[in-house]
Amino acid sequence: MNMPFYVSPEQLMKDRADFARKGIARGRSVVVLAYDGGIAFATENPSRALHKISEIYDRIAFAAVGKYNEFENLRVAGVRYADMRGFSYDRSDVTARGLANAYAQTLGTVFITESKPLEVEIVVAEVGADSADDQIYRLTYDGTVADEHGFVVMGGQAEQLGRRVKEGWRENMSLGEALRLAVAALGSGDGSASRTIEAAQLEVAVLERDRPRRSFRRLARPVLAELLAEGAEPPAAAAQPAEPSAKSAPEAEGSTQARAEPIPAPAAPTEQADESPTDESPTGKSSTGKPPTGKPPTGKSPTEEKPGEEPGTPGATPGADR
View 1: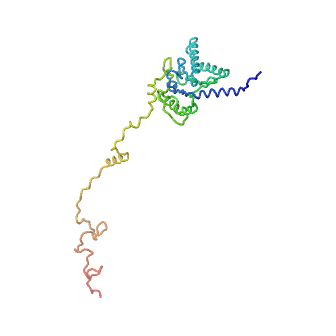
View 2: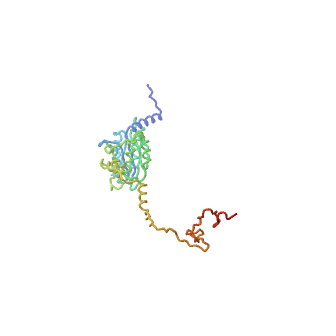
View 3: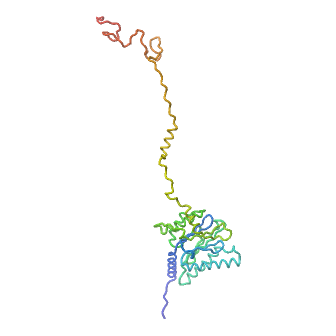
């Protein structure tokens, strides 16, 4: 009798977890963001028939990444669960929390008992009357449930994309801002090179808070393209060129100041007399202390001297001093 091949439980669980993680990482990422009017879902999915984002009930939506046939079975099971509970009790008794618990039991059971785990990761979200009542639950391949706040990124390069979304996300964002952030994160990939994702390559849906009953709505591609283009910068060619005759700010300011300052009028010419009259004191000096500028009473200039006279001896004749 041959002995069965033995594998430790720790190694078995590790191998199953690695297998499931590798399958999920091959899928395209899904970004879930809360905004001021509800919850937005975005993923890169060019297919129009195979949806990764779907409605479960009135105010509950479902998003998944991984193998399509496996998460589609989970989606159908969730719709049946919600319909049965709402029909048996009341529509208000169908909640995202109850649906997440049901999914967790299914995923955990398959991971432990089956030979191959489900290669899926899902998000169940419910929009409330206000942002404080919104609920977002993330469920992994082994049945682990996490209550997320604000945003969730799963599948593909989830860690790198999650850091990008965390840097740009804030509360009470508009729908356009939330979608532009989600698309930018999806296009960043591993961070080495960014790429632009067109609206035709995206699948986007929202849970709108203001809708009366069924909050789920898919965004058509024209509407999505308009929302993504709201924050785009205008092309450089659209900018109006500056006028060639326009002056720079300092020159314009200087010219304005030059025009503002009044130009002084030229002074009127005044006629000056040949000799300005001065008031003389009895000592022969002007009142200012300076010698008079007029002619002396003798009719000679004080500096005029006859030939042969020494300075300081007026009226002396040569040879008078023997």
